[in-house]
Length: 100
Image: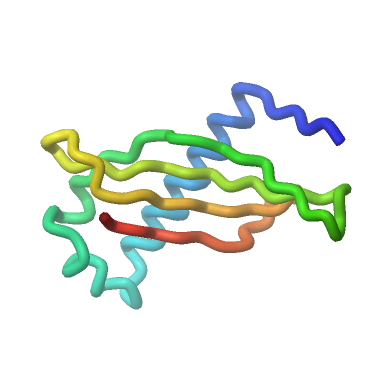
C-alpha cells in the first residue's frame, strides 16, 4: 500500500495536532499540568517534529498517523512532546503529552 500525503495535508495534520494540544492543556480536568512543568503552559513554543504512518499486520489496508510536536521553553530548551494519533479516516484515536 502506498500512502501519499501532500505538503498541504502535512500542514493540516500539524494544525490539527496543535489544536488538540491546546484543547488538552486548556481542559479543566488537566489543570494539574501546570504543576508538571516549570514554565506557564501558554508560553510553550510548539515545533512540528514528525508524522509517522503506522501499519498493523492484522489489517494492512488501514493505518494510523502519529503526529508529533515538540515542546520548547523560551530559552529554547526541549521540555516535552505531544503526540496526536488519528486513523486513516481522520478520526482521533489517542493522544499523549509528556514533559521531560
